[in-house]
Length: 375
Image 1: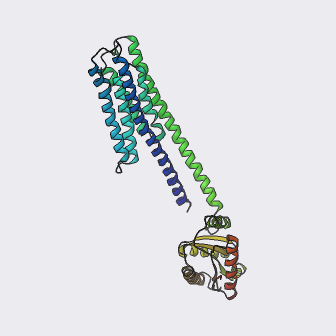
Image 2 (image 1 turned 60 degrees about the horizontal axis):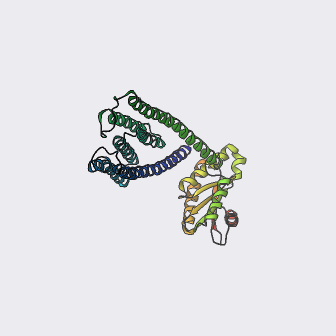
């Protein structure tokens, strides 16, 4: 049971991490769109200034085509690819992350190549790398970093989009700027990888602590002997049902008739085994309710969305199974089980519901091996 609880909570935590990753992916996608629009507006603004100044060294049409239309068109295609990927139902979340991350590197490459006269544009690659660290994936950040480094080197050494841009080899200063930019991107990549390592450790520690907390909470609600829920868990369940105003549920109290004779004749060890058998049958054959040990040989069952007739029929079946089991395990004792049933009503709180079921059980135990419904 504990292993199943661990697995359930781990899956819940992973779902929450996945939801956070999805929110960040949407944010990263919006940043790509924002970068595209911002770059386009800046390019248009700079075009107006340059066209109306003496700094323009080429024709207006060539300048607009080369520094506004061409880069904006390529970046717009990247945004379209991002949009299609984000809306694609067949793509997994990881695949969408790769598409958006790689396209952001491409957008950074286009802007850096078209406007490499501004050396500070290499920070666009740093932005693309940093945005991937939230996923805590070495592969995503590593691919993004490698593409960014390759894009920077390729743009600086092999592409000369801006004829006014001085070559990397034109001067020591220019070559130094290139090396500094490259060093910053490589250093950022290394730092991001280290950060991911610590993020993973932190996440694993958080999961472990959460599991320990949930495990402790579950242990506090479990009866150590029988493995069913204990009295504390019963109080919590009744409180939740009352607070949520569950529309339909039935409360049942049951115990073993003549149980005292088991302890008196065979000792508490045999009595404990009898209780374990009793709890096992209630869990296995009671058709879905929560089972609680209230104390001693007294157990409670909560049936949600069950009618009275269904509950009575289930209790009759339990009586038969328990009688046969007790006859096999304790042939010298005449052990049976009695049941008290109380339906929930709008004018009844949890405490009164328990009293009603207890009264019904008292009537059942007067004749033994009986089922009584409180009216």
